Image (cartoon, rainbow, N blue to C red):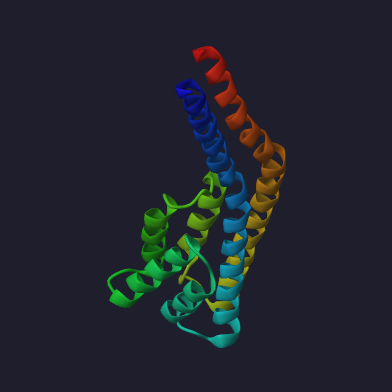
Length: 171
């Protein structure tokens, strides 16, 4: 009886681990879409609303979910303090929030490069840099969707099957 209960716990734990690991594959495209939406909103705020950067970041943070909203919340807070340039505030916020995301180096580089240009140019040039960042994120999103389709189901199955293998080895 104890062996059966132990076996159930092992299979449940490894299956849960597989599902948690597979969740990273489904969360990555979602977070990239949130970033793309946020940058599109930032573009609209800058181009058409003539909204100050700190206020635009606050409004965007209210529109997107975590962890992307945390990036824009921290960015707005750092801009309001006034001791940070837009570039420095963006890079600091990106560093702080990056650990909470499931994004990869490609997205990080696109956002970091975008941050280098933030607040440095006129409105039309800034729009070009936003479009460039959106293009990079779009290609990363396509790659993330391919990886999700290819690996998500396999990782879930591996969690379950590794539990079964562990039970067989222990018996």
